[in-house]
Amino acid sequence: MNSLALSSSLLVAIGLIIALLLLAASRKAKQRAADLRALADALGFNYAGNDSSLPFQANTALFRRGSRRRFRNVMNGTYGSYPASVFDYSYTVSGGESSSTFTQTVVAFRQDHQLPWFELRPEGFLDRIADAFVHRDIDFETHPEFSKRYALRGDDGTAIRVVFTPALLSFFEMLPPERKWHIEGSGFTLLAYRANLTVAPQEIRTFVEETCSIANSFFAASGRSPQSRNA
Image 1 (tube, helix red, strand yellow):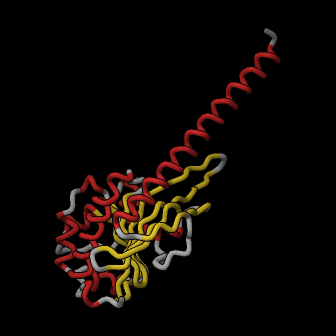
Image 2 (cartoon, one colour; image 1 turned 180 degrees about the vertical axis):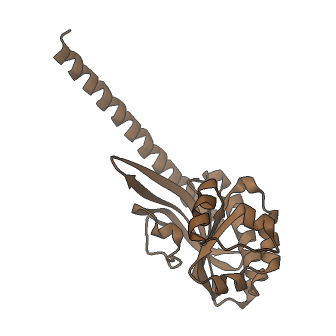
Image 3 (spheres, rainbow, N blue to C red; image 1 turned 45 degrees about the vertical axis):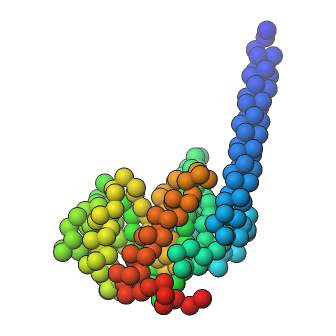
C-alpha cells in the first residue's frame, strides 16, 4: 500500500471514530434529557429544556466566564420554600490554539433580600499567590479555617462582611472540604454548584437537597428566611 492510500485509509478511520464518538455523545445527551424530564415531574418542577430565559439568571462569576455559554436541561420550580432552577451550564475557555469546555450542574435559589455580588470557592495555590499581589480575598481573623479553605471575593467588601455572619462562617467551616462547593450571589439570586461537575440524574435529588441546606443556612445566618420571601 502506497503512502497516499495509507493516508486516505487513516483519514477515513479517524473520521469514522469521530463520527462514532459524536453519535455516542448525542445519544448520551438525549438520554440525560429524557431522564431529567422524568425527574422534573417527580420533583414537581417544569422541564424547560434548553430555554436560557431563566428567571433566576444573575450576573455572577460563573456567567462571566469564557464564551459559548449554554444552558441545558433547565428545570424550574419551588424547593424548600424557595423558587429554584436546576440546570446544566457550560462555557468554553480558549487559549492560543486550544480550548477547554467546562460543564456543571447548577442550582439557583431566589429570595426577596438583595445580596451583594460575591464569589465563594475553594482556595487554591494560585489564589494564594494572586492574593499576595492584589489582595482581593476577603478574610476573617475570627474564622481562620474559613479563610484558609475558601477564596471570597466581591465588589463591596463591607456589604459582604455584613452578610457573612459568624454563624455563616462557622457553617461553611463544617462543610466537607472534598465537596468543593462554589457559592455565588448577586441581586436576589444565590447559586450553588461544584465546578466542572455534571451530576448524574439519579443523584440530582440529593444534590438539590444539599444545595437547599446551604441556601437555608446562608439565608438564616444572614437574617433571612424562606417565610419572608415574596411568592
